[in-house]
Length: 138
Image 1: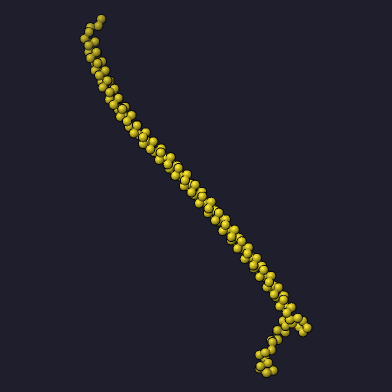
Image 2: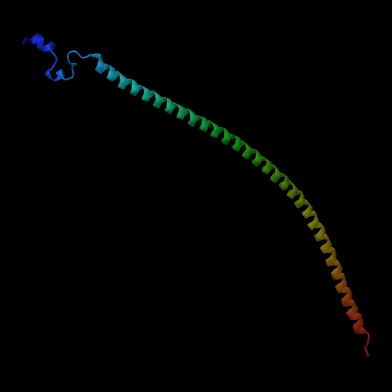
């Protein structure tokens, strides 16, 4: 065998993979192509399923975000209403405190007058006891 024929000849182990004489050489190629097409179909279905799943999850996330925003804004509005009510109550409490201070001042003035009257009454009793002490008793 010449060196040139050695380079062009198929290896000895390749004889089993070559089509036997009389057999269609594209038969194995058709079987391989069938496997490739099946695998490609499965891959396309898997990619389409993953894309559909991602779109579904994205839509769910978007709806959850919108729901959260709506609830958060409702909560902020409710909080603003409650703060306004607290502000009104604080204003009323301030007015009540002013009235209470006025009433307390009036009470202190009345108590001062009552102390003066009580002091005058005790002086009168003392004078009355002194006068009755001078009168002889039987």
